[in-house]
Image (cartoon, each protein chain N blue to C red):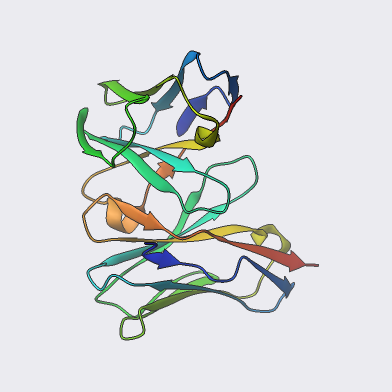
Length: 115
Length: 111
């Protein structure tokens, strides 16, 4: 496989459930990201990992917990979510320091519905 | 407060004509600007970028123009093709690998 792969593509979970989103990149990139896209809102950066180290946490509630075990894998652990957390969750990767001119490579996203 | 704005949610253009997508920003510290294209059920894909030291960057049918005094950038697609129908996002950065995105403009190219 090439590019950035996200699983699952769709997820429906209850507010008391615990689930995890998985992201894997096959590009040899050294930075990975979680973004959230809600309806009619811009993409919101949630977390940044550079060389497996978390460097950004944009005031994300603790019910979202990221994990980056190595430079190719990124997880987003979900616990006790709210219905307003329903959104498209996008994973992306990039190669430093060229990210500003070459941008991210995004996965296809996980469509999350919290019921 | 939203730092990058795309005020036109949608745009329709005849095949072969020019498509112009606009983007405005508020933060004068932004030094790189990118455009992404997104098809349904896929993630956004990088299209073209421009540094703040330039006012124009061209790649095939796609040209991005930057007007720093107006804090405005635009993406021109010439000629437009039906396969260009997608949602286009502009994004801006001043902190290395963190980008601020607009809400997107849905382009429909009519055959």
